Length: 289
Image 1: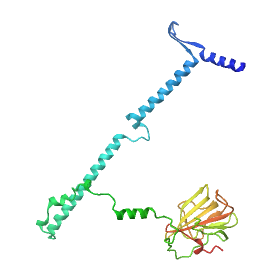
Image 2 (image 1 turned 120 degrees about the vertical axis):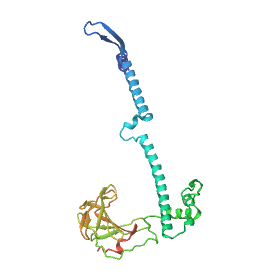
Image 3 (image 1 turned 90 degrees about the horizontal axis):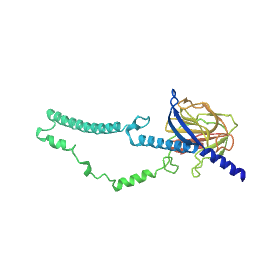
Image 4 (image 1 turned 45 degrees about the vertical axis):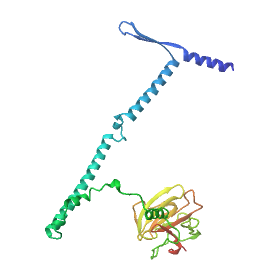
């Protein structure tokens, strides 16, 4: 306890020990300015000055036009100019449409398609002067029902409405034993095929690689887009031999069987097949044995 008290006293003494700051004339050594300070005063004044400087800087950036000179901030004048130009372009487009319609009616009169008496310039231009504020833009009952139906539609529908237009033979990505089959109810939209680690994985058809990256859950993943709205997915690979944008042929090696990713249970290929946005059972189109 005594040591702690002595240390506190020494610290307090150091903080409150007074110093004298003197400014002298270099030629005559005449004292021009002097100031008594201690370490505590210097620390407090320095902290307050830093806080004041930060506050002033924040206010200048947030509430003054100076922020426009900082990279990343949009100019207010530029936004106003863009808005004004957008309104002007809209007005010019309306005038142009009006003039085109008027000239078209004049050509019809000159060709004799319509009579001059039926051409009323005022009524023609009135079509472009409708007050949109008076229009009822609220959705009607039929529109609301359609919106609700579309909102509840699943892009990757796995129910009976899902259909496939696939009518061609696909090349098997690998030969092996299927340990986990396609099960839409359990949301397992793939087949898991066990094969020796390092075995070549091949493309099921001609196509373009649209994804070739590493993911934490499924390891090395490659996705190929084929014709007829068909997409094939290959997961848990040890390595990939193709990159995004590459063109591949049917049966061409694109990866090697591996055991990568957090969701893997051993060396195997997790293979998915999608047709027009709907998952389909790969076993119905490919013989893996």
